[in-house]
Length: 395
Image 1 (spheres, rainbow, N blue to C red):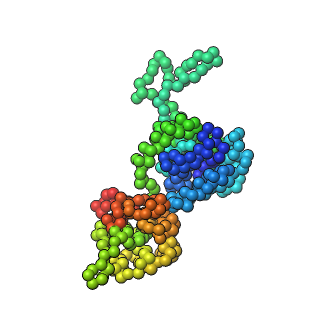
Image 2 (cartoon, one colour):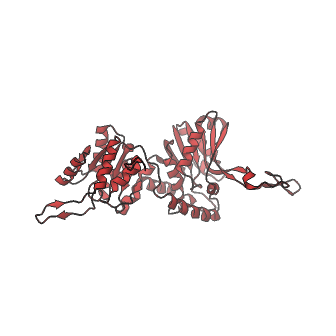
Image 3 (cartoon, helix red, strand yellow):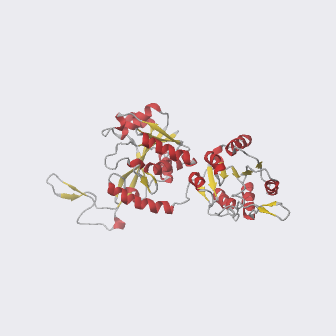
Protein backbone atom coordinates (compact mmCIF):
# COMPACT_ATOMS: atom_id res chain seq x y z
CA UNK A 1 0.00 0.00 0.00
CA UNK A 2 1.33 3.42 -0.98
CA UNK A 3 0.40 6.48 1.06
CA UNK A 4 1.06 10.19 0.78
CA UNK A 5 1.73 12.08 4.00
CA UNK A 6 1.32 15.87 4.13
CA UNK A 7 2.27 17.38 7.51
CA UNK A 8 0.90 20.87 8.15
CA UNK A 9 0.78 22.83 11.37
CA UNK A 10 -0.90 26.00 12.50
CA UNK A 11 2.15 27.62 14.05
CA UNK A 12 3.90 29.09 11.02
CA UNK A 13 5.76 32.22 12.09
CA UNK A 14 6.71 33.85 8.77
CA UNK A 15 3.21 33.61 7.25
CA UNK A 16 0.48 32.91 9.87
CA UNK A 17 -1.72 29.92 8.91
CA UNK A 18 0.00 29.86 5.52
CA UNK A 19 -1.12 26.29 4.80
CA UNK A 20 -4.73 27.44 4.36
CA UNK A 21 -4.07 30.92 3.06
CA UNK A 22 -5.65 31.30 -0.43
CA UNK A 23 -3.21 30.55 -3.24
CA UNK A 24 -4.61 31.08 -6.74
CA UNK A 25 -8.12 30.87 -5.32
CA UNK A 26 -7.67 27.75 -3.17
CA UNK A 27 -6.13 27.05 0.27
CA UNK A 28 -2.40 26.39 -0.15
CA UNK A 29 -2.61 22.76 1.06
CA UNK A 30 -5.39 22.09 -1.50
CA UNK A 31 -2.88 21.98 -4.35
CA UNK A 32 -0.51 19.34 -2.97
CA UNK A 33 -3.47 17.33 -1.64
CA UNK A 34 -4.94 17.32 -5.15
CA UNK A 35 -1.62 16.30 -6.69
CA UNK A 36 -1.37 13.37 -4.25
CA UNK A 37 -4.98 12.33 -4.94
CA UNK A 38 -4.33 12.53 -8.69
CA UNK A 39 -1.39 10.10 -8.43
CA UNK A 40 -2.56 6.70 -9.66
CA UNK A 41 -0.03 4.85 -7.51
CA UNK A 42 -1.15 6.37 -4.20
CA UNK A 43 -3.89 4.50 -2.35
CA UNK A 44 -4.44 6.87 0.58
CA UNK A 45 -3.57 10.49 1.32
CA UNK A 46 -3.19 11.79 4.88
CA UNK A 47 -2.99 15.41 5.96
CA UNK A 48 -1.65 15.57 9.51
CA UNK A 49 -2.30 18.73 11.53
CA UNK A 50 -2.58 20.07 15.06
CA UNK A 51 -4.84 22.97 14.04
CA UNK A 52 -8.66 22.79 14.15
CA UNK A 53 -9.01 25.57 11.59
CA UNK A 54 -6.82 23.65 9.13
CA UNK A 55 -8.85 20.48 9.78
CA UNK A 56 -12.10 22.34 9.05
CA UNK A 57 -10.68 23.80 5.84
CA UNK A 58 -9.48 20.42 4.58
CA UNK A 59 -12.78 18.75 5.49
CA UNK A 60 -14.62 21.44 3.53
CA UNK A 61 -12.86 20.69 0.25
CA UNK A 62 -13.07 16.93 0.87
CA UNK A 63 -16.84 17.25 1.12
CA UNK A 64 -17.15 19.36 -2.02
CA UNK A 65 -15.33 17.19 -4.53
CA UNK A 66 -14.93 13.54 -5.42
CA UNK A 67 -11.34 14.38 -6.38
CA UNK A 68 -10.42 14.03 -2.69
CA UNK A 69 -12.00 10.63 -2.04
CA UNK A 70 -8.55 9.23 -1.06
CA UNK A 71 -7.93 12.04 1.42
CA UNK A 72 -8.23 11.88 5.21
CA UNK A 73 -7.26 14.57 7.72
CA UNK A 74 -5.71 13.27 10.95
CA UNK A 75 -4.24 14.77 14.10
CA UNK A 76 -0.68 14.96 15.38
CA UNK A 77 0.86 15.37 18.80
CA UNK A 78 1.83 18.66 20.42
CA UNK A 79 5.46 17.52 20.38
CA UNK A 80 5.47 16.89 16.62
CA UNK A 81 3.93 20.31 15.95
CA UNK A 82 6.53 22.28 17.89
CA UNK A 83 8.99 24.69 16.27
CA UNK A 84 11.89 22.33 16.98
CA UNK A 85 10.35 19.04 15.81
CA UNK A 86 11.81 17.66 12.59
CA UNK A 87 9.71 16.40 9.71
CA UNK A 88 11.18 12.94 10.33
CA UNK A 89 9.80 13.08 13.89
CA UNK A 90 6.28 13.60 12.46
CA UNK A 91 6.75 10.82 9.88
CA UNK A 92 7.93 8.35 12.52
CA UNK A 93 4.99 9.26 14.74
CA UNK A 94 2.66 8.58 11.82
CA UNK A 95 4.37 5.26 11.08
CA UNK A 96 3.64 4.04 14.63
CA UNK A 97 -0.12 4.12 14.05
CA UNK A 98 -0.68 3.56 10.32
CA UNK A 99 0.05 0.63 8.03
CA UNK A 100 1.72 1.19 4.64
CA UNK A 101 4.47 -0.21 2.44
CA UNK A 102 5.77 3.02 0.93
CA UNK A 103 5.31 6.64 1.96
CA UNK A 104 5.54 9.82 -0.08
CA UNK A 105 6.31 12.83 2.07
CA UNK A 106 4.63 15.72 0.27
CA UNK A 107 5.31 19.31 1.29
CA UNK A 108 2.35 21.71 1.29
CA UNK A 109 4.75 24.56 0.48
CA UNK A 110 5.26 23.19 -3.05
CA UNK A 111 1.90 23.89 -4.74
CA UNK A 112 3.33 23.53 -8.25
CA UNK A 113 3.55 19.76 -7.70
CA UNK A 114 1.39 17.66 -10.07
CA UNK A 115 0.05 14.14 -9.86
CA UNK A 116 2.18 13.12 -12.84
CA UNK A 117 5.33 14.10 -10.86
CA UNK A 118 4.35 11.67 -8.10
CA UNK A 119 3.47 9.03 -10.72
CA UNK A 120 7.02 9.34 -11.99
CA UNK A 121 8.32 9.09 -8.43
CA UNK A 122 6.62 5.76 -7.74
CA UNK A 123 7.60 4.37 -11.14
CA UNK A 124 11.20 5.25 -10.31
CA UNK A 125 10.92 3.62 -6.87
CA UNK A 126 9.87 0.37 -8.57
CA UNK A 127 13.14 0.21 -10.52
CA UNK A 128 15.72 -2.41 -9.40
CA UNK A 129 18.13 -1.44 -6.62
CA UNK A 130 16.17 1.65 -5.58
CA UNK A 131 15.42 2.40 -1.92
CA UNK A 132 14.26 6.01 -2.07
CA UNK A 133 13.31 8.73 -4.53
CA UNK A 134 13.36 12.50 -4.21
CA UNK A 135 12.24 15.39 -6.39
CA UNK A 136 14.85 17.76 -7.76
CA UNK A 137 15.29 20.51 -10.32
CA UNK A 138 18.23 20.77 -12.68
CA UNK A 139 19.92 24.14 -12.32
CA UNK A 140 22.63 25.56 -14.52
CA UNK A 141 24.24 28.00 -12.11
CA UNK A 142 27.88 28.64 -11.28
CA UNK A 143 28.16 27.99 -7.56
CA UNK A 144 30.68 29.55 -5.18
CA UNK A 145 31.47 29.13 -1.49
CA UNK A 146 33.62 30.76 1.22
CA UNK A 147 36.91 29.35 2.44
CA UNK A 148 38.27 29.68 5.98
CA UNK A 149 39.86 33.04 5.10
CA UNK A 150 36.62 34.56 3.84
CA UNK A 151 37.51 34.36 0.16
CA UNK A 152 35.13 32.72 -2.31
CA UNK A 153 35.90 29.94 -4.77
CA UNK A 154 33.86 28.18 -7.49
CA UNK A 155 32.57 24.78 -6.43
CA UNK A 156 31.24 23.36 -9.70
CA UNK A 157 33.40 24.77 -12.48
CA UNK A 158 36.87 26.05 -13.35
CA UNK A 159 36.88 29.86 -13.29
CA UNK A 160 39.62 29.87 -15.97
CA UNK A 161 37.64 27.57 -18.23
CA UNK A 162 34.09 28.88 -17.96
CA UNK A 163 31.93 26.39 -19.88
CA UNK A 164 29.19 27.36 -22.28
CA UNK A 165 25.69 26.46 -21.05
CA UNK A 166 25.29 23.63 -23.56
CA UNK A 167 28.55 22.11 -22.26
CA UNK A 168 27.74 22.61 -18.56
CA UNK A 169 26.22 19.72 -16.57
CA UNK A 170 24.87 21.98 -13.85
CA UNK A 171 23.61 20.65 -10.52
CA UNK A 172 20.63 18.80 -9.12
CA UNK A 173 18.95 20.78 -6.33
CA UNK A 174 16.28 19.54 -3.91
CA UNK A 175 13.02 21.38 -4.47
CA UNK A 176 11.35 19.88 -1.39
CA UNK A 177 8.20 18.79 -3.27
CA UNK A 178 8.31 15.09 -2.38
CA UNK A 179 10.40 12.26 -0.95
CA UNK A 180 9.43 8.58 -1.29
CA UNK A 181 10.75 5.67 0.73
CA UNK A 182 9.58 2.41 2.27
CA UNK A 183 8.29 2.06 5.81
CA UNK A 184 11.14 -0.34 6.50
CA UNK A 185 13.78 2.17 5.41
CA UNK A 186 12.09 5.00 7.32
CA UNK A 187 12.00 3.02 10.56
CA UNK A 188 15.54 1.66 10.18
CA UNK A 189 17.25 4.93 9.28
CA UNK A 190 14.79 7.44 10.79
CA UNK A 191 15.26 9.54 7.65
CA UNK A 192 12.99 10.51 4.75
CA UNK A 193 15.42 9.07 2.18
CA UNK A 194 18.18 6.50 2.53
CA UNK A 195 20.06 3.70 0.80
CA UNK A 196 20.22 3.85 -2.98
CA UNK A 197 18.50 7.12 -3.88
CA UNK A 198 17.22 8.14 -7.30
CA UNK A 199 15.79 11.46 -8.48
CA UNK A 200 12.81 12.71 -10.43
CA UNK A 201 13.50 15.98 -12.20
CA UNK A 202 10.63 18.47 -12.06
CA UNK A 203 9.95 21.70 -13.93
CA UNK A 204 12.54 24.41 -13.12
CA UNK A 205 9.74 26.66 -11.79
CA UNK A 206 9.21 24.18 -8.93
CA UNK A 207 12.53 25.26 -7.43
CA UNK A 208 10.60 27.81 -5.36
CA UNK A 209 9.14 26.87 -1.96
CA UNK A 210 7.02 29.12 0.24
CA UNK A 211 9.01 30.14 3.29
CA UNK A 212 8.78 33.93 3.20
CA UNK A 213 6.14 36.46 2.04
CA UNK A 214 8.21 37.28 -1.04
CA UNK A 215 8.12 33.60 -2.06
CA UNK A 216 4.34 33.75 -1.95
CA UNK A 217 4.14 36.46 -4.61
CA UNK A 218 6.48 34.60 -6.95
CA UNK A 219 4.71 31.25 -6.63
CA UNK A 220 1.21 32.71 -6.85
CA UNK A 221 2.15 34.28 -10.18
CA UNK A 222 3.42 30.90 -11.39
CA UNK A 223 0.32 29.18 -10.03
CA UNK A 224 -2.04 31.39 -12.01
CA UNK A 225 -0.19 30.39 -15.17
CA UNK A 226 -0.34 26.72 -14.16
CA UNK A 227 -4.07 26.83 -13.41
CA UNK A 228 -4.82 28.41 -16.77
CA UNK A 229 -2.54 26.00 -18.62
CA UNK A 230 -3.90 22.90 -16.90
CA UNK A 231 -7.57 23.91 -16.81
CA UNK A 232 -9.63 20.75 -17.28
CA UNK A 233 -6.48 18.59 -17.31
CA UNK A 234 -6.83 15.73 -14.83
CA UNK A 235 -6.51 12.00 -14.38
CA UNK A 236 -9.52 10.01 -15.63
CA UNK A 237 -10.11 6.59 -14.03
CA UNK A 238 -10.84 3.52 -16.13
CA UNK A 239 -14.54 4.00 -16.88
CA UNK A 240 -16.76 0.93 -17.17
CA UNK A 241 -20.13 2.68 -17.01
CA UNK A 242 -21.46 6.11 -18.01
CA UNK A 243 -24.75 7.33 -16.57
CA UNK A 244 -26.46 10.65 -17.14
CA UNK A 245 -29.40 12.76 -16.12
CA UNK A 246 -31.76 13.73 -18.95
CA UNK A 247 -33.10 17.29 -18.63
CA UNK A 248 -30.28 19.82 -18.78
CA UNK A 249 -27.75 17.18 -19.89
CA UNK A 250 -29.18 15.25 -22.83
CA UNK A 251 -31.54 18.17 -23.46
CA UNK A 252 -31.34 21.93 -23.11
CA UNK A 253 -33.67 21.73 -20.11
CA UNK A 254 -36.51 23.35 -22.02
CA UNK A 255 -40.06 22.05 -21.95
CA UNK A 256 -41.80 22.21 -25.35
CA UNK A 257 -45.50 21.56 -25.97
CA UNK A 258 -47.41 20.96 -29.18
CA UNK A 259 -50.74 22.64 -29.85
CA UNK A 260 -52.35 19.43 -28.65
CA UNK A 261 -50.57 19.65 -25.30
CA UNK A 262 -48.02 16.94 -26.06
CA UNK A 263 -44.68 17.39 -24.24
CA UNK A 264 -41.66 17.53 -26.53
CA UNK A 265 -37.91 17.44 -25.87
CA UNK A 266 -34.94 18.28 -28.03
CA UNK A 267 -32.10 15.72 -27.98
CA UNK A 268 -28.76 16.00 -29.77
CA UNK A 269 -27.79 13.39 -32.34
CA UNK A 270 -24.10 13.76 -31.43
CA UNK A 271 -24.85 12.33 -28.01
CA UNK A 272 -26.31 9.28 -29.75
CA UNK A 273 -22.97 8.80 -31.52
CA UNK A 274 -21.17 9.18 -28.19
CA UNK A 275 -23.26 6.44 -26.59
CA UNK A 276 -22.71 4.20 -29.62
CA UNK A 277 -18.90 4.53 -29.45
CA UNK A 278 -18.90 3.85 -25.70
CA UNK A 279 -20.98 0.69 -26.19
CA UNK A 280 -18.59 -0.56 -28.90
CA UNK A 281 -15.77 -0.19 -26.39
CA UNK A 282 -17.63 -2.30 -23.85
CA UNK A 283 -18.68 0.58 -21.60
CA UNK A 284 -22.17 0.29 -20.10
CA UNK A 285 -24.46 3.27 -20.69
CA UNK A 286 -27.66 4.52 -19.16
CA UNK A 287 -29.86 7.29 -17.81
CA UNK A 288 -30.81 8.07 -14.21
CA UNK A 289 -33.63 10.60 -13.97
CA UNK A 290 -36.17 11.78 -11.43
CA UNK A 291 -38.78 12.04 -14.19
CA UNK A 292 -41.17 9.30 -15.28
CA UNK A 293 -42.12 10.17 -18.84
CA UNK A 294 -42.34 7.98 -21.94
CA UNK A 295 -40.15 10.35 -24.01
CA UNK A 296 -37.08 9.45 -21.92
CA UNK A 297 -37.88 5.76 -22.27
CA UNK A 298 -38.26 6.08 -26.04
CA UNK A 299 -34.90 7.84 -26.34
CA UNK A 300 -33.12 5.27 -24.17
CA UNK A 301 -34.58 2.40 -26.16
CA UNK A 302 -33.62 3.97 -29.50
CA UNK A 303 -30.04 4.41 -28.27
CA UNK A 304 -30.04 0.83 -26.94
CA UNK A 305 -28.86 1.97 -23.52
CA UNK A 306 -28.15 -0.73 -20.97
CA UNK A 307 -29.76 1.05 -18.03
CA UNK A 308 -32.99 3.06 -17.75
CA UNK A 309 -33.72 4.26 -14.22
CA UNK A 310 -36.68 6.66 -13.95
CA UNK A 311 -38.64 8.22 -11.11
CA UNK A 312 -35.48 8.28 -8.95
CA UNK A 313 -35.97 10.10 -5.66
CA UNK A 314 -32.38 9.39 -4.54
CA UNK A 315 -30.01 9.20 -7.48
CA UNK A 316 -26.97 8.30 -5.38
CA UNK A 317 -28.80 5.29 -3.95
CA UNK A 318 -29.97 4.27 -7.42
CA UNK A 319 -26.44 4.43 -8.81
CA UNK A 320 -25.13 2.32 -5.92
CA UNK A 321 -27.77 -0.32 -6.68
CA UNK A 322 -26.99 -0.24 -10.40
CA UNK A 323 -23.26 -0.59 -9.66
CA UNK A 324 -23.93 -3.61 -7.46
CA UNK A 325 -26.24 -5.19 -10.04
CA UNK A 326 -23.66 -4.93 -12.83
CA UNK A 327 -20.63 -5.64 -10.64
CA UNK A 328 -18.99 -2.26 -11.31
CA UNK A 329 -17.12 -0.24 -8.67
CA UNK A 330 -18.39 3.29 -8.08
CA UNK A 331 -14.87 4.53 -8.84
CA UNK A 332 -15.26 3.16 -12.39
CA UNK A 333 -18.52 5.04 -13.08
CA UNK A 334 -18.89 8.40 -14.82
CA UNK A 335 -22.04 10.41 -14.10
CA UNK A 336 -23.27 13.58 -15.80
CA UNK A 337 -25.58 15.88 -13.83
CA UNK A 338 -26.48 19.55 -13.80
CA UNK A 339 -28.62 20.46 -10.79
CA UNK A 340 -28.97 20.17 -7.04
CA UNK A 341 -30.65 16.75 -7.15
CA UNK A 342 -27.50 15.37 -8.83
CA UNK A 343 -25.05 16.54 -6.15
CA UNK A 344 -24.88 13.39 -4.00
CA UNK A 345 -24.64 11.17 -7.06
CA UNK A 346 -21.77 13.26 -8.44
CA UNK A 347 -19.87 12.94 -5.16
CA UNK A 348 -19.83 9.13 -5.09
CA UNK A 349 -18.67 8.30 -8.63
CA UNK A 350 -15.16 8.08 -10.02
CA UNK A 351 -15.60 10.73 -12.70
CA UNK A 352 -18.19 13.45 -12.10
CA UNK A 353 -19.12 15.71 -15.02
CA UNK A 354 -21.55 18.49 -15.84
CA UNK A 355 -22.53 20.73 -18.78
CA UNK A 356 -21.12 24.25 -18.96
CA UNK A 357 -24.51 25.71 -17.97
CA UNK A 358 -24.91 23.59 -14.81
CA UNK A 359 -25.56 25.43 -11.55
CA UNK A 360 -22.44 26.74 -9.79
CA UNK A 361 -22.87 24.37 -6.82
CA UNK A 362 -22.55 21.43 -9.20
CA UNK A 363 -19.54 22.93 -10.97
CA UNK A 364 -17.78 23.17 -7.59
CA UNK A 365 -17.91 19.41 -6.97
CA UNK A 366 -17.35 17.84 -10.40
CA UNK A 367 -14.09 16.64 -11.94
CA UNK A 368 -14.92 17.99 -15.38
CA UNK A 369 -17.02 20.90 -16.62
CA UNK A 370 -17.84 20.36 -20.29
CA UNK A 371 -17.41 23.09 -22.86
CA UNK A 372 -20.84 22.27 -24.25
CA UNK A 373 -24.16 23.27 -22.72
CA UNK A 374 -26.88 20.74 -22.00
CA UNK A 375 -28.41 19.40 -25.22
CA UNK A 376 -25.44 20.55 -27.33
CA UNK A 377 -23.47 17.29 -27.33
CA UNK A 378 -22.17 17.01 -23.75
CA UNK A 379 -22.10 13.19 -23.82
CA UNK A 380 -20.15 13.18 -27.09
CA UNK A 381 -17.58 15.54 -25.57
CA UNK A 382 -17.23 13.38 -22.45
CA UNK A 383 -17.13 10.19 -24.53
CA UNK A 384 -14.08 11.50 -26.41
CA UNK A 385 -12.36 12.22 -23.07
CA UNK A 386 -13.15 8.80 -21.64
CA UNK A 387 -12.35 6.69 -24.69
CA UNK A 388 -9.72 8.98 -26.26
CA UNK A 389 -11.48 8.27 -29.55
CA UNK A 390 -13.52 10.66 -31.70
CA UNK A 391 -14.80 7.81 -33.85
CA UNK A 392 -11.96 8.09 -36.33
CA UNK A 393 -9.44 6.44 -34.01
CA UNK A 394 -8.00 9.65 -32.64
CA UNK A 395 -8.64 11.95 -29.69
